[in-house]
Length: 435
Ligand SMILES: *Cc1c(COP(=O)(O)O)cnc(C)c1O
Image 1 (cartoon, rainbow, N blue to C red):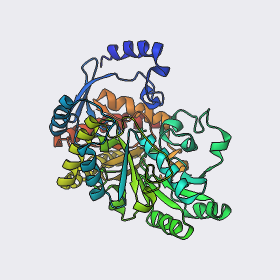
Image 2 (cartoon, helix red, strand yellow):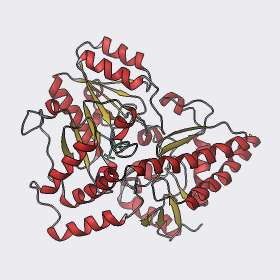
Image 3 (tube, helix red, strand yellow):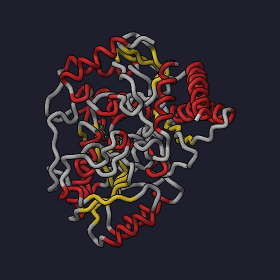
Image 4 (cartoon, helix red, strand yellow):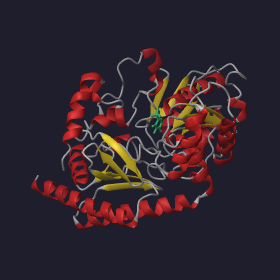
């Protein structure tokens, strides 16, 4: 496969952009080799600057759930463009968007639009702190909530891959208010709450984790958090930037039947444009300025082009809930195919899957949290990744990411993905035998 143009662009990029990329994981550091520079994408396929075609299993880290450049979203954006691109003033579309989100997401009674998932989580914890008058927050090891200072403690994926889980530039003062517990460990959370009586403002969690690879919550874990938060007056925040509109039209909270106090959204909500949002109970959201005393603002928030794209996306998902059944079927076909190949090759690696998210972990351990995720052999993952790429399948370039499937994948694509896995895993099996 010729990727000469990507190589040249990467060399050029590094002259002007730190590491040549605008978000660290894109640099392929965890898997080796040269990042692909993307020229275009359509449906189930993405194309690099050398015109190589790949089947998409990242889909912009989630937003392209309908496949790339879906005609309805393209049309919505095109229709919005002649009316100018930003006003910094309220619009009718924002009201329609808010109404739709409130109807779709169980916990959301009031919603505020922002421009990214990071902004959403930063605002949500500020609101939780303003509401409770408390300072401390509990997050889970391996969960990622964007790059806000308070979250860059045991932060999963990008931070994990780069080997700097605690970022430089985060002050001790900020870090001391972030307490961390292992995912799926309710007893550890209870111990933290007991050790910090009436000081915990919020518990923030990915209700299904995607940023240490795909890790699902055990049966009673989220329910236990819900009960604990009710007892202790703690605001429970579900960070559904990844899972929102992906695992169900109402997100993980609908799928799992647990309702948080606040929810953060991103990725799919913008249909591919930069949008985030946070929302929840009326009484908590009424703390937000200009009603309440928690300040939060945004010049481009509710941007009309972004709202047009997001509204078109959410409308489709709301009106065609069969999409979720279809997505799960597609994903299960892929993971069952991989499982079969693993068995044939006597490899006992772990696959975690829920709805249209899955990860293949190069470990024989059950992956239930950050520590078990880290037992994965990342070198083997790197080899697997390169072999998959060679066979035309574009995966997330890190062991500690989930894959995000789109409804654009055809039966033929599914077969191609499974066959690419056969090729890649045969190489891995050989490698393991030689050792
Ligand atoms: C991607 C992600 C974020 C950050 O969103 P950005 O739009 O990248 O700022 C926050 N939380 C979760 C769970 C995410 O997956």
